[in-house]
Image 1 (cartoon, rainbow, N blue to C red):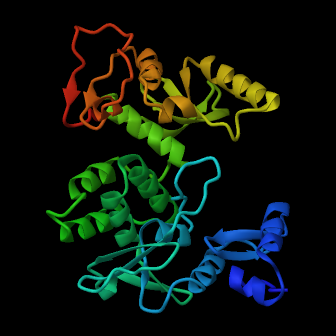
Image 2: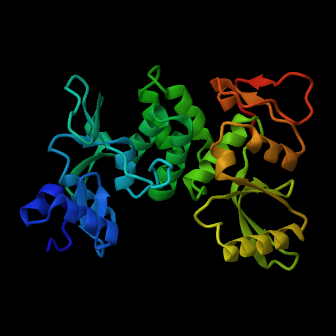
Length: 330
């Protein structure tokens, strides 16, 4: 009925669909939600043009799309981690001195918006990749910020120097210290937000920063596997096993055979799970400590200093958990 055009719930009501009808179509599959309050025929492929047309149904003229929504429009995987990967409210920005955008389903803010920080994407005004990445690094929580920066570098090819130039313009403002630290850690080779968070948790525990996506070959040069991350010189790998691709018996058998082939070449591979990476305890640190044979040296950013009751470490210590203000680098 709507062809390839995105439509709103109000549009659906104009052609006789009740709210229950629309929910049923989304639940059963003929219709999918593109973003909050905007829908499209499920057969229409997802691309930048579709996302821009969907945003155009929502964003009034003169407002600028920023932060996570700008990254999403540019096809970077910047959605918050969760069971349903729900699209968050639309991030909009108005120039400094203007009233912040206020509209149901959006998060409004103000900030400097010079013309060179704005690009038109199919009729929607969006912050350019370098400004988008800088804002994400400054204003999102540390794990979300690094995951977003990795995704932006992977999806758009934005260079760290371009992001650093933007951060120089915000010197002394909120989040710039965090942004510079995380920009140095960002890596476009990370293939998922979970891998980015795993890498950051290693750094915040004081372990060397692991290298993402290490290819392993046998003695004859035959490709065996690509590890999520690890330490090439020490021949130690760290794999993140989420629930989506590592749950069925067939998937588990494949994982086991793949790791056994890598371990036959002298590698040691440990696995961390969603619960360990996102949990508040020290189970993650125990896995990495066992892999590397060293105790962690926590940074000020580690969850241990967030006031959570996560128990005491089980590895040998001298009675004190050392705290570092600067992460250990590889």
